[in-house]
Length: 415
Ligand SMILES: *Cc1c(COP(=O)(O)O)cnc(C)c1O
Image (tube, rainbow, N blue to C red):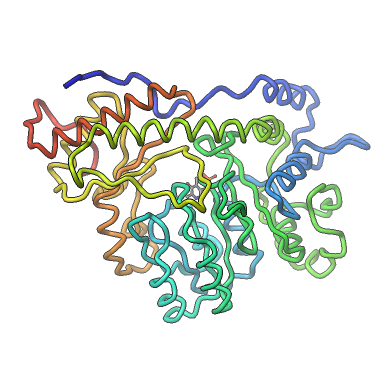
């Protein structure tokens, strides 16, 4: 068996494109970094980004803000979540999602995530019934889309609204409809590990003029919202303009300037991500050839996804075998994340780590997370790198399943 080692960095993203650097330098030279600090007749980079993103997404309105988490808080507040109101969300997600519900005064009601990593629709129907919730904040976790047609039928029949967390699905679609265009509002992140990178940043899209007016006022628009290029007409603000608190969380022109050229390159980058995703997937299936050794997550034909990360299930490993598997991968340069750990580690966490959320019984999600492994695919990796990574994971799993002894100490956190 080959023991090739991978030497790339899983946290190394591509450089910001030169065109974006040039735009950023122009903003810095102008001194006009605040989105409402424009010269006469000028549109700010932030307003232009909102215009560009609304057009790309096919949404009527877009508001740029400070982070993806903030966009979710804003959407929930603009929807009108009341203090203590139940808000449904999928249990397998990242901590900013329940955090946003808490920040908006809501109470997270967690819905089981099924074996394909998407929300379990039967459990959703039950939880709508038992909680009386009128809103689902659905996180398309790791870019996996549930059957959106079935979901919308279920929600519409019960009068439940949808807000989409599209942090991992910018550019994805279901049956030709872009992720983010199903609910009353959608939230995107431009944080470094997402599909366009400004360090921090968020985008909120919606076709609902009243909701968007409330969100814009809350984001800290003062009385300058008429300068937006992808906002509702002034009439939409009439009712809300003196009623909505300013909860400042705007985007600035520097970040917007960095993002606009990246948006123009996004389609190309989606193809590059997917080539890498398919290379990892093919190699790991090949290398872990034994029956039932690992299960890739199926990708339905209706789903167009963005392969910026990959997940697979390796069932039946106990804690010691999991630690040995992760250690084998890590020694050969492959950084896998495991969501089953007793303690949260870096970006991973599970519902029982969110101590501010009332404890909830989610046996299917718990079983899923024990067997679930996850890996980022930065575009700095070549397709050949990705094939090597898949091979390393497959071989490490096969060696673990075969009970080959592991020499030396374990090299994993928080098992
Ligand atoms: C990153 C992320 C967010 C929020 O993004 P930030 O911009 O970091 O606040 C929301 N949901 C999921 C699933 C994420 O991965």
